[in-house]
Image 1 (cartoon, rainbow over the protein chains, first blue to last red):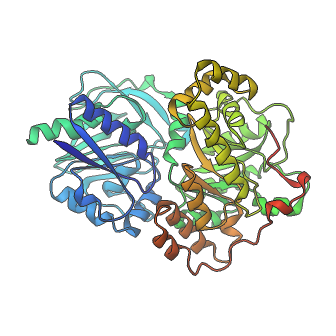
Image 2 (image 1 turned 180 degrees about the vertical axis):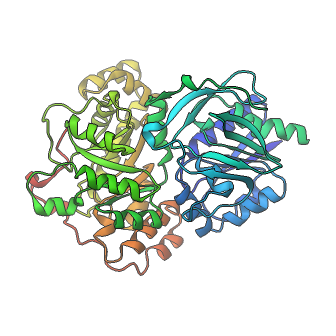
Length: 199
Length: 302
């Protein structure tokens, strides 16, 4: 079976996510076809979606300008998987506490943008993630933190007592960038492990 | 259930973190601004970052004299006024300006030929900084020398402040053309190419194997319209710097927003036609062919 993966490509580190899902697919013996989503009309064809890192203000603006936003909401409402990282997490959240971001509200968390500070405070560190045997090499770039989670949200990882990876049904959100390394375990966890469980 | 993570194990300012920041800018438009008001307009228009300057390149060109880093207090005000990243320009080879910009908290430093070079032989050793750097290049040799010095992003030099996209196209074609040649070469030929172009051999091999620059590659220098931005995306740039083109236009809000939308829709001419319509006058500019050699900025810092 071929998995159609849509990478939201209006802005951000799109090719990194495309590479990561192809790599994860190969490891699971699954054929992955990647669609880059810049306009409306493509999301409904996708089995899974990836919402990359980038600048949440720019991404949020283009998702609404291009009419992609309601398609992502419908995708999640249909119970299909979504992985949202960093800016993607901010855009996916219920509340980003910032007028400059128009949230999709598909993940019941509230976030603080740039909570770790500016680029000089960006960092990489090994992170313990629930369900993974060894720490994950997490890269935090001007990263948000999650400061409140809804009842249906599981916290998968925390940094300094703040949740930085969560799951709600088929939606996984991370403050860090699993697509920046060649370690595909977060993509596995978001797509292949859950797809296998659902099937 | 969450497990304990060792907070002491974090590392800042690594190549991964610096290059990662540059990757987050991809597909975006970075706009030159000279004050907080312009920074807010740029953010509202959908800019992924702003470049804080004392004057836009077109005005630097007109004014003449020595062009230096902006007043750090003004840069700090811009940093505080927006939620998107803020970049600042230092003179080529001016380590102290770069240190000051890093201390002020800019997210990326542009070691830029638009300012008057402080050192006519050396660039800043960028590897020692926590802040990532972007540098201009006209060709692949220049680009790889800058990456070797620690640049996390390369942009075409183009010819800043002219509003003429000609030189940005020329530089991007030159870089891409050299990469295509390298791909067809064997190991010895690549070694020879590295010697002839004064480029570090390991980066030459890495570029040939990847089929692209090992860092993010933006367009800059003369981009003035949505069509210009789309043209540079067609030439496989990862994103766009717009200098004088936004606030030199009759309607900066409309021009900024249109350039952002044009990058996303660069391969769709009908949508581009709508985006490029009714924007008012774009910046006047100076054609590159009419520019005296001594007024060109692109030959600074090779």
